Length: 69
Image (cartoon, rainbow, N blue to C red):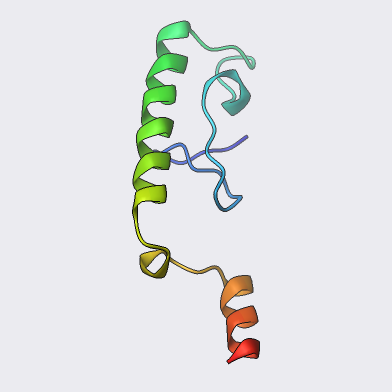
């Protein structure tokens, strides 16, 4: 899985860390995996803590919202 610096994936609401994100030959050192775990946990917490109306909408959600309104 490809993640950004906040361990977010290209799938909305999904964060990833550890070996699943790649590493050297698909295997990471435990220190790197734990560090990513901390970053992913903090990022997910901040994401969930923010009000839903302050989050960025994807094009799919925005187009669905415009059809309802």
